[in-house]
Image 1 (cartoon, rainbow, N blue to C red):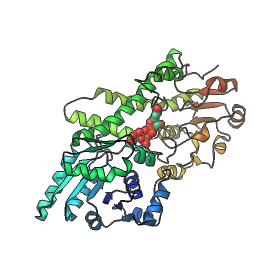
Image 2: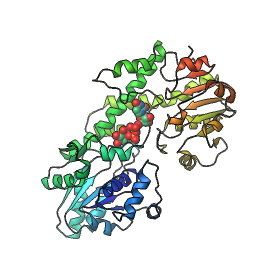
Image 3: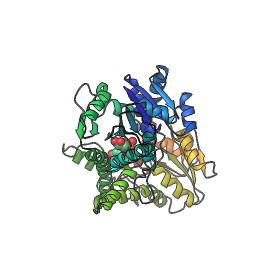
Image 4: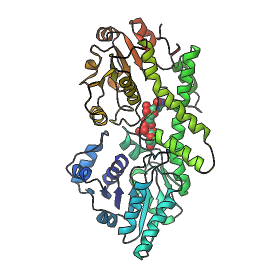
Length: 449
Ligand code: UDX
């Protein structure tokens, strides 16, 4: 099938590459000239395991093209995926200007029947706005052309996006048109072979499904973080509690890991946007607001524990940070807990000595050259002569810690573990002041055996 994808960001690129990989003829279009030039030269602007080789082999096979030529792109596909950004505007609502700009472009250049597919995460009701925008442009052009708008949200996780696209749990398609259902079925057929994954529903239900899924997952995390904070104050170990409740199949083990708060491009913005959508229709989403507030508070616990461990003396200290990305296997630092930590440390006159396996370039891009940010080549250098270590991301290579060694590196043996990677008994037996999340002792004292 001929397919056009608007937007070569994370979602657009993964969608375009995965659809080309099963033989569709895909054109990816973006208004960002330099991004397209880089892609044409085979340079992939984001880090995602497997994506680079998938893009390259499909470009080579001439199934995947990149262009800034919108008129060519609109002409190309009967399916027109919109996969551009929906950043939060000042009040936390999703900003639809990029989505609607694409709708205008499609209206301007379309020359025959098109299915316009909202892939970006967009508030309930957006498909109607896209439809109105295209209809308005066609009216201005004084042409009559048929088109449909459908919703097909993505459920991609950074770090496993290709796997999620090709072997995802479901393919949600919101439409009330049989013609669209058939075209979407054909588009996804190669990824819908082993069992029926296509779920047809109304456009609005599909739009809400995406937000509900992310809000539910974010709720699980904030709930566990709240329990962890309670456990700390009540002298219980949240890791025992996690196993205890996870064993109930109604609860399950997934997504109940306490930590230093969720980040990334989806949860923070989607929870906020859904709460805004709710209040716009006269409903105050108390639970969603609490999920967000708990997460905000959780991100500050790293600094609080560190500050307590250092007796409030941050000025002139050097703090080792392991992990900058919001989670492993990505270079994405959007809303990462490391950022709040580093920014607070700088405000208190401390220097950050940091290492991340993938996000160093991104960190430099965000913060530039500054004296109080030292980016080092590996985890060993990060702790050299540092006053304490804070672990923000659970990259595999951080999952071992030799107590004796780390004591020899740090000027004080303080380890703040935002991801509960280690056994507190082993850490304290090795003479480390080990602070984790919800592990039985009050956050104001290190965990001791
Ligand atoms: C998420 C959704 O999982 C995905 O379906 C959606 O399409 C986009 O948003 P992503 O943001 O890539 O994906 O990351 P995810 O792996 O879900 O993790 C989100 C955050 O939650 C991370 O900061 C992670 O550290 C945190 N998390 C996750 C926890 O703190 N505890 C958990 O148990 C799980």
